[in-house]
Length: 171
Image 1: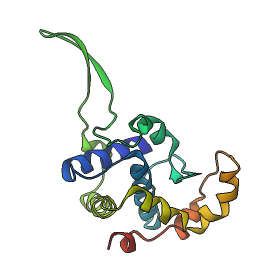
Image 2: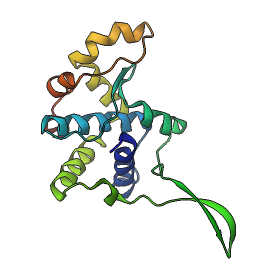
Image 3: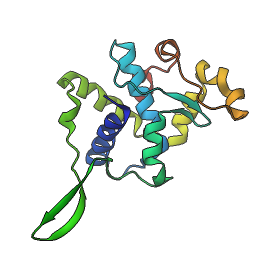
Image 4: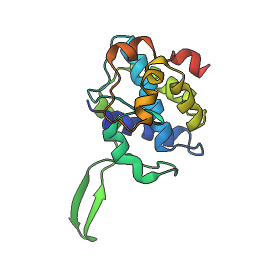
């Protein structure tokens, strides 16, 4: 699976369950990061995309590039494929509806994801940024980030041992 498919699930879930909550691409990135770390600590890699250290904390570049156009506005829909339609109503392009079953998660995995997302969505985006900035893995890279260095990756070991515990963050 790629990170975009997983991000689409988070967007779909948030919009169905928290329609009036602030949900920017900054918040999406941090929620994506914390869910990824939680699963990694339990022996599951959610997606193959790398997570980078950026000025505002962890970022998955493919997801960032897909949703950055939202800026500080609410992300309202998953980015699904666009299909060409030619029917009695004419010719047009339509975005396919997101189907959460494409992720092939077990019931238990979906429940865990939903619990984490439900807990973290209540926090402000920059509160989540600050939480990631308290982690040693980001602190060690802070000067390099400030100097404009790019492509600073989180190592699997950093994600396993230095990210905050989701159970603490959501309680």
